Image (cartoon, rainbow, N blue to C red; front, top):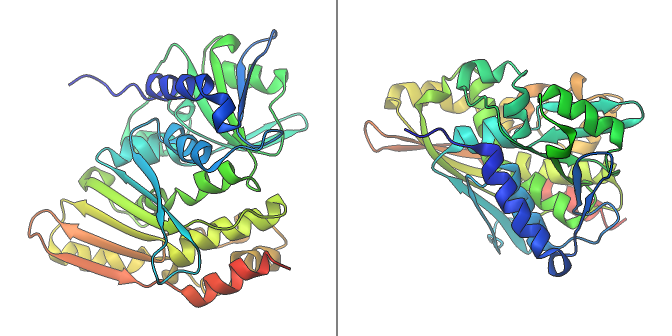
Length: 320
């Protein structure tokens, strides 16, 4: 079997976005001191379609992403839907925001297939997918474009020339940034499964849907709104090689309701912990509802439920 070339796939899609930059309302800038940055919402307006493509780039173009009319059970006009037949590659090896990028005064949350080139996170020891690409593609959630020092640092970590670093950047409080974060419903379910001890080798395919949160007035509110979209509106389905008995043991541990921090808008929880992510129960970060389908029996089991009441409280807070 040919290896999945995550960075190459993402680079190809990013090149397509660059060719259509005007209509997507994004901008590419090749630096004389190394690297190319793609502004998806820092100084550019971005767009809904730019966000959809940014989410695909974040998943190394190993997943489908589309925007659909919202389900009646959620208080929004649109849903963000994702699906993948290669969920470990798309979500865990690429999309998961496992790289905190800190260099001088610059900070951002890093995801995308450049993580597989760096390969320094423990999860790669479990899932594989490390690679040595000719170029690397990163997606950074930040309100600022990376400077030369940051790009050089990323190049060194990925053992590649700075000119071969491609970075797509969008703040949480932008339309593209909002879409790409909400598109993490499937990823959060897989990560939660890994955290509670499930061997992800059993996962065959998956899909997820979450309500498109309103674009926030600032990044802090954006963090709250986009997290709530998944925590209280995310609905994920995963097919895996486990028995009915194994699924019934695993399933109740996955939804966000399994966490003691479940039950109020995320921004309230965040504030109660002095805005320190590391004080929040890490098991909170998962979709509201999950359906697990046993490939052995064909039976489906659903755990958790959508909480439209909390979504309504959260989303309406953006109006004040």
